[in-house]
Image (cartoon, rainbow, N blue to C red; front, side):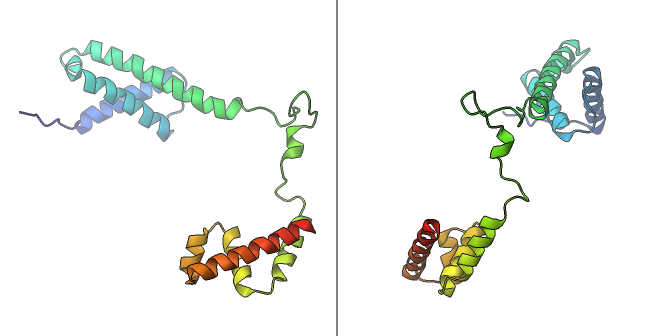
Length: 176
């Protein structure tokens, strides 16, 4: 006969939360980060599921094992968070020894060269077919060809004819 596992009581949850907060405080982690708290609970539950009887009575062996596993899980999570904060390479260093250009120069500036965009939109505005223009702007918005066909209620043949027309126009634009 399979026994139904019981949930923790509110008192037990407060006790475990306090235990987790004490561990966070001992290793110098902030209290309010939800991901860290969830990681600690997951580590605690893994220990508890393996040996719930170790928490009965004086329960020192269960709590000691839980402390070690939670502490290790939190330290690993902290290392992962610190990696993304501090271990990224500087954009001022060259791309490689062969290419002395700083990485920053290879990034497009968000408010940078607008000339290409103006030329492209001007070219697209001059396309005579209304459906081709609509397809361009839908594709630029991230829609797929099938989504455009469904949304615009075009037939399959009309959609692909329009797409091929657009492809030809774009090849013309690239050759300019």
